[in-house]
Amino acid sequence: MKTESENLILSLIEQTRQHLNFATSLKSKSDKELNWRENPESWSILECIEHLNLYGNYYLPEITDALSRTKTKGESHFKSGVLGNYFANSMLPKEKLNKMKTFKDKNPLNSRLDRSVIDTFIDQQLQLINLLDRSRKVSLNKVKIGISIAKWLKLKLGDTFRFIINHNIRHIKQVERIATKMKIDLDKNRVLKNYS
Image (cartoon, rainbow, N blue to C red; front, side, top):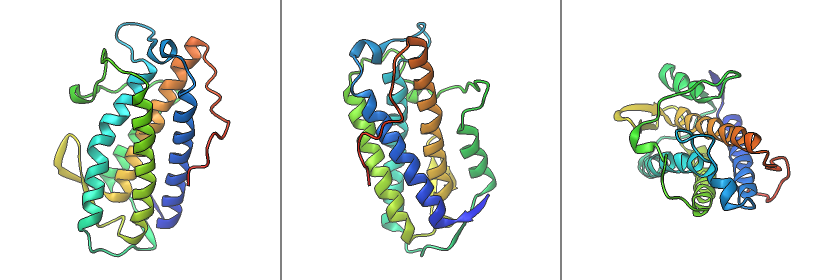
């Protein structure tokens, strides 16, 4: 995948704003709705969001550190790496549910969670927008971020952003499926706040 760097950043910022609005809509739901699970092995809405927070706890500091250390200049185009493109695309949900095994340290099943999980996710998405904005000044191709399962395996910054945001898309779709099963109206199309 090759694209203009600015277009990539703008599309990722817009997607993150949609995630912020989605998370804000969850705050109006009851604790019962947020903690409901279809069966003992399935995640609740809060567990889905906490799973995303656990990844944010790793990737946001890594990106912040890389941006503060880099001396690279931004370039006009981003060209996805083979591995990075694979990881980013593999996170996107498919028509037919494509289950993936979750690493134990990122699995929140049966955690005691409250709605502060949503606030953490909102804070992380605001940080992500800030990092995307800062990344306009650096190389999305040359700055590398170690992945959470093997720090020695590094992805281009642009691919890392795509992976994180596609992973968010995947689990927000999971939350939507949970809400559908519970017959919860998430009112996800309503713009609740202008995050900019």
